[in-house]
Image (cartoon, rainbow, N blue to C red; front, top):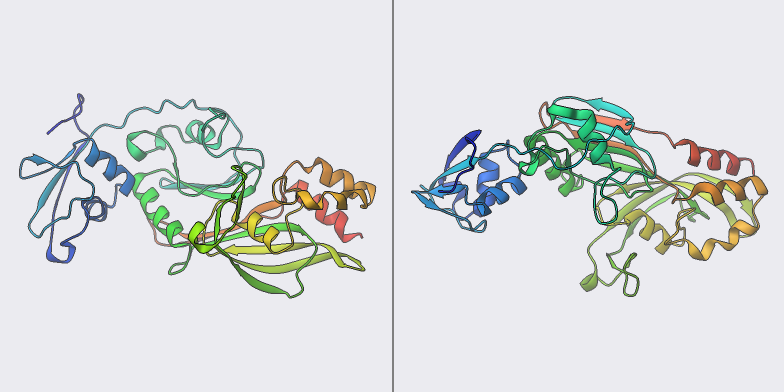
Length: 338
């Protein structure tokens, strides 16, 4: 069985009982070894680090049988190739398992094409230092959910494999059977005719624009549901309120979900460069101060203002709330004066 050139940091074993018969190997091992995420287990299987009866098994879909006994070698964690960067972070909570931050608008979550550095991950590597675990085999923070670059607000990031695995499970469930809650505050054009409701409409890639998502037929999109509530309305005209503050709670986690759903609902987010282009003409008729504030916003008026989840170690419910950041609060204050 192939091993790392360095001594392994751990050797784990697990035997299959009758209740687990027929499970995929990656699922069985990740459940038997909760300190490892399923992604980490899959990588170790594919790397030839799992054996049964002396034979290496590299198929993550291998179906386990009662009495099977598996040995899993966990190689040493390698140092990250990402550069630590001293980017200020607004830390609301931190312990050995996780960190909760209030992300500012304009900060990309993780490196990618066209953004090799200057990200939240680079900042977390610098901030957390040696406290990070080997998530995915590399010492780096575990991103279990994301916010768009220009969406501000609350995020939780795992610092250990175990925390990553348990948090990812909560976010995959979207609070349907647990206590996870994600709430967003959005300043939108106009106001719904009723105080609350649910937008249940599939979301998929836009048929002609690669940078956009759109409400699509079910066979071309994925189920998406957004619960919304009107918090406040602003300005009264012949066509109703000029704008409103909406609280959205997600039942699913699709790309651009709040932005797409609110635009589909006829109330796109103020400042949204992708989904509110048809509302740019409204700016010309606004008072100068409000016109200038929205013109200088440079992003969609969306803030992840509430986050609740069960701590992966203590099993206690953690709840966090974040008010509108200054740029959105200034617009809301000016709207109140209309």
